[in-house]
Length: 95
Image 1 (cartoon, rainbow, N blue to C red):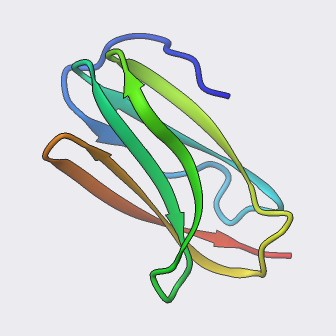
Image 2: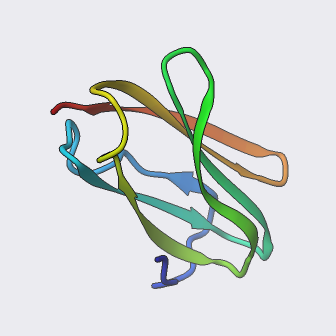
């Protein structure tokens, strides 16, 4: 699942690792204040394919696993939203 490690000074979304991946990758993000966190994965057409986090979280750094076993090879995007902060990054699933 996800586990807080420490408290960052700012909101941040790291690049997934490994990237490209098959079939599992890890997404890491940090939040500096208690808040409602949304982390979702979208396909290349912008359709939401998976919600990884959708809850109130305390400040900390979190690591979430994404398993792409049931998805086709291709480019996917993951989007972090916390309050007014939004950031999106790209990842590549190769099978």
